[in-house]
Length: 155
Length: 155
Length: 155
Image (cartoon, rainbow over the protein chains, first blue to last red):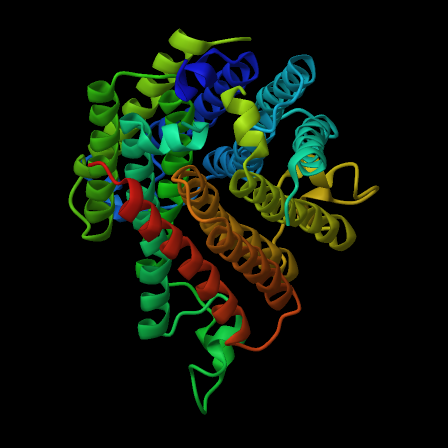
């Protein structure tokens, strides 16, 4: 059986592929939420965006910031800061041949922590709900990095 | 034949490698464009950057923002928000053994949409040119995520 | 031997896994440094973060920016702008079957350049120390992209 076919059949790889797709789709959703608030609140980052949406007025005054939009953008940036390590470390962890049950535990906890983080950030809920969801995802990444370095490290 | 040799010969993987290199080189170009505008316009983010470039004056007043620089930085951030999902989803899609012609279609449309997005953003062209190029790239990522989840999902 | 087992034994892949874990752990450290300065300086991005840390006062006035925090955040964003290309290009480079000694040279120089970049940025040291460390990492990414396109390109 070819190498790619073997990967596509490997359960750890399939689990990794699934959760990468889930967390990156969730991250992509942040772009849509940002657009939604920009359009409904008339808050634009560029003059050419304001022109066309704001008819018969001074488009320039709608090039401005808004706390609701900025909150979504902070949430989006926090996703990038945490999901990039998940994808990179998760990939090398997956290919270092871990046990399926342990790998699944890592992927499921990470995905759950990031979905909760978004809900807690956008609602917003009082702290430490968001801080906790952030740290759980952070620890999952650190744990996968440790497991990878233990099993395949080559400096 | 070894697994890595098989991957390096696999046409879908080779296409993915090619377009990953192309879109990430394009994204890296944004750093150079930002530096270019910072240096030619004397607009710096850090005091130590202004000192040395601005001789015989008050370097501190060149630690400031500039709409041209900010536009390039927004374009760069938008790249990150969209190219990170392309790399992550594209990888697991590639390894889920898709058909070559369909995979090539996804990769080519995505790369084209991001190159156009940059041109439209930096010129800038009137909307909805940039919004359209953004959404086409967004749909390519969503389509690859859907194909991956359909063929290898394992929750 | 299975494909994943072969990958996990391949020395180029093991080296890539190691340096991906190292640079991403370094990048994750930026989140902790940001939190440290936010908490010790009472500088928060969200009202719900300030409430609870600032007792018996007007929490709202601690939702503010601070140059030390902003410096760490710029360093973090610069990491994202450069480590994302390293992970993406480095992966397809690794799987394009390069020579071990050359691959190791790329990975080691990149990791060193990014660790130095962080030290130079946060100290801060006078320029061009930081600019040089940035460009060395940039050139490593460009070199891996070139090697990948030369050996496996498929447009």
